[in-house]
Amino acid sequence: MLKIGLTGGIGSGKTTVAGIFEVLGIPVYYADEAARQLMNKDPDIRQGMIRNFGTASYRDGILDREFISRQVFDNREKLEILNALVHPVTIRDAINWMGHQTTPYAIKEAALIFESGGKGNLDRVVGVASPLELRIERTMKRDHISRAEVLKRMGSQMDEDKKMSLCDFVIYNDEVHPVLPQVLELHRKLLEYAKNK
Image: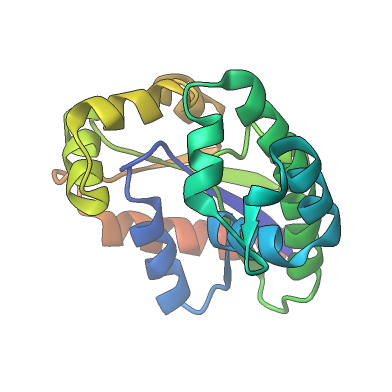
């Protein structure tokens, strides 16, 4: 079975693209959602969070996301500690999940595939590209945040052009090229590649 990564910057629409693959019968592992669950369930993450961020990290046994956001906001060192705690466990969880899939290929949807070191466990990576202004607009609308906040978040991610250059395939979600035909064509290619692997 092929292990496919699906990535893109904030507001690129990778979740929309992932949803189309799901409609086609391809299972998708959503790394952000999995990480949220693992931060509550995984004992290693929990211990690390309390050790590095204090007992206030959890309220009634559930991660206090607002508290953690305040800790890592504008603090690169603390953000790196958080990522070092969460990324390896999430990568392991994704590998385990993929090992249980029975389709010709399965997808791991994650914003930080290259940054987290998760690329090494994948056969191919698909990027979702969108123009900057469209990404800003989508994120402002989705998260109800200001343009400045969106730009701040984007500043902490890998440059979009660089990220797309590292991908094996790119889907353009720019409201010019229809997304569905691109996904269908890529689905066909991936099925073919899986068959010949």
